[in-house]
Every structure is written in C-alpha cells, then in structure tokens.
Length: 372
Image 1 (cartoon, helix red, strand yellow):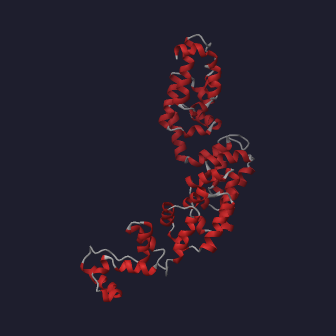
Image 2: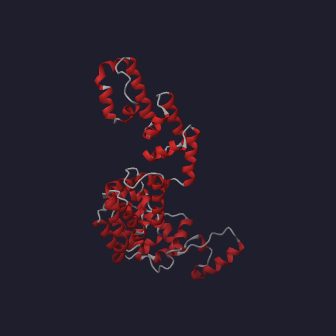
Image 3: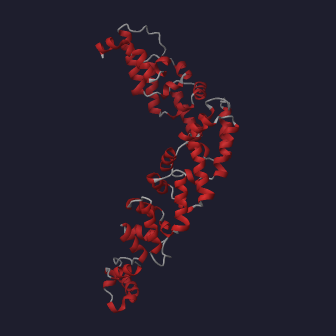
C-alpha cells in the first residue's frame, strides 16, 4: 500500500518536473521552486495523499487530518480499522465522517481497543444503526476507557432515560451528555434532588426533557434550590423541580426582563411571582406570543386578569390549536342555544381533545353539522 502510494505520489505534478533519476531529491527541487513561485502547491505527505484518495477529503481537510497521523509508518493499521468498521455495518459516508471528526481513530488497535469496545456497546444494547449513530455522535467512546468511563455513564443514562432507543436519540441530539463526570456532577446532583424529596419518576421526567439540570456543578444546583425556596416554592411542591429547571435555563437578567414585560401588560410583581409559583413553565412562552395570548384571552374570551394569574396554564395552551378554536366552538354552540354559557374558561380549555369533542361536539353532532 505504502509503495503504491509512493509511486502514485511521485507521478504527481510536483514530482513530474524532477528528473526520473532523482526522485528522492525532489524535495530540494520543490523547496527551491516554492521560493520562486508562491502559486506552486504545497507538497502532500503520504498520509495526506492517503486521506485524499481513500476518503475524498478536500486538500485542506486532508492536511489538517494528517497532522494527527504523520507518525504512521504504513497504512496497515488504518486499513484494518476500515475493514473492522465495515464489518460492523459502517458505510463509506459514516466512515468518512468518523475520520473527519476523529482522525486518530485510524490508529486504533482493532483487537485490543476497537473490538472490546464495540462488543461492550453491543452488550449494552447498541446494535446495527444505533451503534454507528452512537460512535459518530460521541466519538469519545473510542478515546475513553470503556470499563471505567463509557460503560458506567451509559448505564447511568439508561437508568434515567429507560431505553436504548431513547438513549440513542438523546446521544445524537445532545452529544455532550457523555462528557460529564459521574462522580463530580451527575451522581451528586441526582442525590441532591432525592434529598429534596423529589421522587424518581419526577426526576426522570424532568431530566428526560431538560438533562442540563443535573449537568451543572452541584454547588450551582444548591444555590438554585435556595433561590427557588426563596420565591416561595417548597421542596415538596410538585412545581419545585420545574422551577429548578426553568431558572437553570433562564438567567437572572432574563427573569427580571420577563417580570418587566408582564408589568407592561398590567401585571404586578405579586401577580408574576404568584403565577410562577403555580406554573413556572409559563415563562418559556415568548414575549410576542404571550402578548397575543393575553390579548385574546382578556379581550375576546372575556378572561379576567386574576383568573390568568390563578391559572397561568392558560398561557401554555396553543393559541391557534386550542384557545381560538375552542372559544369559537363554544360561541357557536351558545348562539344555537346548545349550552347555557355557564362553563368556565378553565373547564373548557383544560379538557383533553378527546373529552372536549365528546362533551361539546359529539352530543350535538347533528346540529353541529348544520352550521359547521
């Protein structure tokens, strides 16, 4: 392989101008010519040439990747790595991506490094496409000790997420998940949440949605918990863990900006904090959408501001898919004398789609079709 590449390399334009009897003196010819013409291309190392011909890298990418591989004396090991990856179902595009992300993978010892790790990952449930996706999105598994680092982390996240399928999805979308220390962050933070009295099922639910909650420094989580308590949300409240998650994602400056925005809509600070204690998630609604929802609920649906403060969940419902359509349905039913108008907005908007259809449409099926 090395000999064939050398032969191919020596036929390149760089070497063509050199005498066929002085092939190995061409570096001198080239170094001289480069001082004469800045447009003469830089010489390619054999490793860069290998990357160009094997993976169709750009010249720039090949030069960059070759910096990590120039110690190679032959291409026997890279070839064995490629054959190994293909044996596990990696296609050419996936192999190219892996090498472009982690060129040193071509230097891995197949028998001592790759094979034990791949077999270990299979034992943890990653097979076929899921195995390839894991490696490509988290190539740290090739750089780290499997037994001391990779296996414990995967088993930890499997305990939180519950299935290999969900883990694989998470690892693709959040490639940094496997980079955090179990001992320094994940385990201490999980223990802290349990110490607060938060049940495992609620911890699992919140971490599945917002894993960064347990990725922060333990001292930061403690400070965050103290802040939530200071806002009047006790540990045993169902909203405590949600408040932790929201405040972990929203800076103090952003929280204050949200408060000032709600004040501009007529809310007091007490209203804002009361709504936050009841449903912290309402802070995730964008300001333009928040204004649209409040305008609709107050000016069209007749909702009073104290009712919104008491039921901030209204602000979490979709304007186009729930609030406006259901209000329209109830207005039509009322105009046809099909309901008395005594139903509260909370009752109407809080019902599931199935129950709303059953309670307000199916029972008036024939009459509803008349004016649908």
